[in-house]
Amino acid sequence: MSNLFDGNFGHSSTDNLFYDTTHPTDVKSVVLKAGQGILLRGTVVGIGTADTLAVKVNSTATDGTELADSILTDTVDTGAVGATENVVTTAYSSGSFNRLALIFGGTDTADKHETRLRSLGIFMKDTHPIE
Image (cartoon, rainbow, N blue to C red; front, side, top):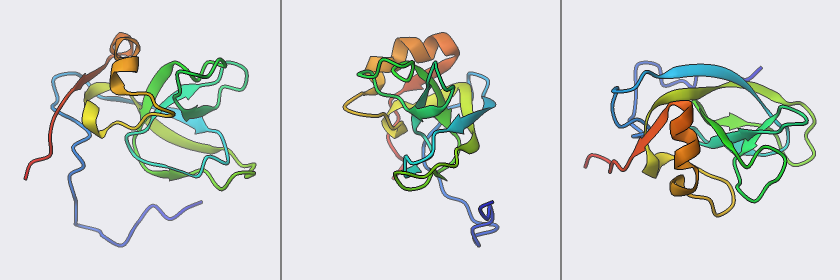
């Protein structure tokens, strides 16, 4: 199990993932497919229909992962290509998110997945970082 304490206890930084608290924020468990490397906080994932494993959403897929499902709550290392141990983590299943902070697979953008995410309770708005 990885060390959840990064040595920066008492310090925080803002990543602008959320734009406000208008919509309730809920979290659920997801199982990330092994071998994807490092997936950053804010990565939008889709769930495979055959294996129920989460990967970075990509609209060109045809296995269920073309449909956005949730947003990773934390940065997670799923291991190098060829790794075999899937990773259990958490993802946001609803909330108010900054579309500029979200990460998608392939050449996908927030616009491509906005209707689907809205139907799940995930709302997006452009919010630029505070200088």
